[in-house]
Length: 82
Image (cartoon, rainbow, N blue to C red; front, side, top):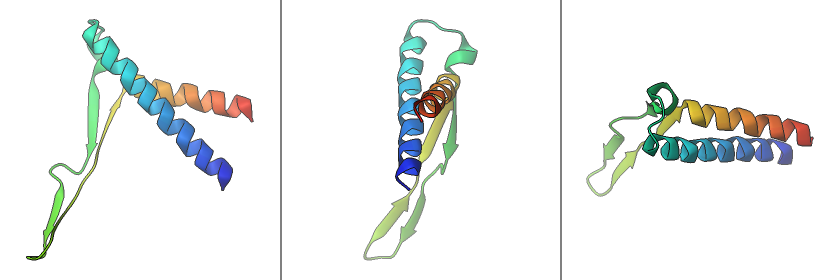
């Protein structure tokens, strides 16, 4: 259980680092295939109006080549550490 949580955290940190690198490269004039993002998720968010309370559920995940590369590098580093 503890190892699975570490695995998920390492993958998430790799995705965040890859996204930061993606933002830095987009300002530096990198090729389009490297910085294009593919948004996935609930768009528009799902809303439930119960008169008294209005609930809105939604999330969006933007994947790019850099975020996938960050996840792969983090995964390799995680497995080498074990």
